[in-house]
Image 1 (cartoon, rainbow, N blue to C red):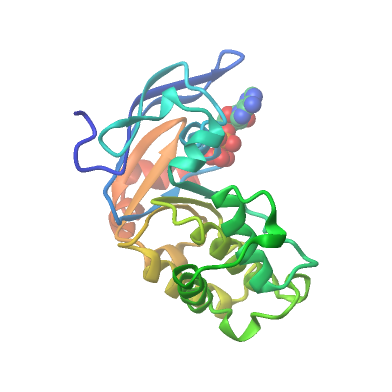
Image 2: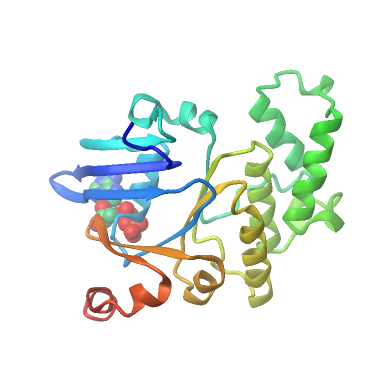
Length: 248
Ligand code: ADP
């Protein structure tokens, strides 16, 4: 029971691409309900790490557990999504021609594997959940708007809402506030703080002031391994971290 008390547990994970060690002895654990920020210079291995967790890339060796019992290396990408790991890439991918409501409804249908969606009706628990998600993602007033007409930030929130309709235990988010206005960034921080506790989150971000508002613990990746871990203040004061950010 190596991963006891953790939602995600990586131990001594290695991946090489054509001999280049993209992930090189990575250890990481995330507690249930935690919001963890991941930072690190370009090429540190952040994307590859997320690819390993979601089953897109298979490590050469190491341990990857979801909760204390699920060995993720025994599952493929769609199975891992079904286990409750949701991933959001940097660019929003909402259905522009559909309304906010229809996007959320479609996410739920997809999750439930509904084939004949003409006959699909939300039950009352699902309606309640959809209303709750709309509120969380700050789009309750935009429910009938076409997604294509939303601002960049609102599209990002809608995509997070689509993931939430599938009730993920763990959410992986890649640079969620890139391209957002300051106000959208502040409201995204609110959104994340509302998700923390009910969900576990792993957020790859470069925006340090955003990280400061949302996260207690930050992991710094470099050369495919953890260079430092602690509060943002602690890692920013770490000589090795300063060297990596300034000295390259
Ligand atoms: P980050 O997301 O932190 O910028 P990545 O995980 O994208 O870092 O990349 C880590 C390193 O692995 C980089 O040097 C990148 O060029 C290399 N890499 C990533 N994916 C592949 C691949 N499929 N084939 C070859 N090299 C790759």
